[in-house]
Amino acid sequence: MKTFLFIGANSDLAIEARKLIEGKGNKVISISRNPNELYPDFLVGNAVLNQLPEISNEIDGLVYFPGSINLKPFRSLKSTDFQQDFEINVLGAIHAIQCYAKQLKEGSSIVLFSTVAVQTGMPFHSAVSVAKGAVEGLTRALAAEFAPKVRVNCIAPSLTQTKLAGRLLNSEEKVEAMANRHPLKKIGKPKDLANALEFLLLDNSSWMTGQILAIDGGMSSLRL
Image (cartoon, rainbow, N blue to C red):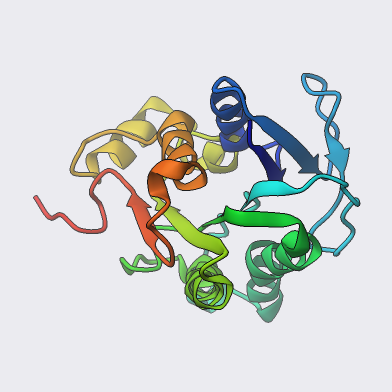
């Protein structure tokens, strides 16, 4: 049995991933800003504020889930928008890794999250692309620094059916329009990302580090 630490564990993706990973006989320690009624074992903490609980366990992996979708025209963005996205996506991940790095076992795995918009330029995505671009840089830098003991990889999804993306997918028309932008003509589901996360956490990816894994319906690499 392996033990994994999830930061930002109240997200739709984190809940789906916890079900999948615990269903394979592993343990997940969950940390979130808010309690979860379904999982009374949630620990309360805030990585952005560097207020994280102590845990006694050694861990086989760490996942940082928090993210943002702050889509505005560049002319409308203030420096506080860039700062807030950077704090949520980058500084929170840094705080979490620094807090728990000593508890990572030999052969463990860290997984971060980026976005398809880093490698594929999209209008109105400048704030989140700046932040997630830094996440991709952090992924590669830590993969080099932590090798060979710890692997560090990143998932770069396209739009996925989650609460975070709710306002972009709150009608059938929006869902259809967004689906048609992807070569596979559908929106991603939390389970699609949970399957990729399971792969990166467990031993099937043991010869993989410093990679940005595109789970995006083909958007980043195909033009049909």
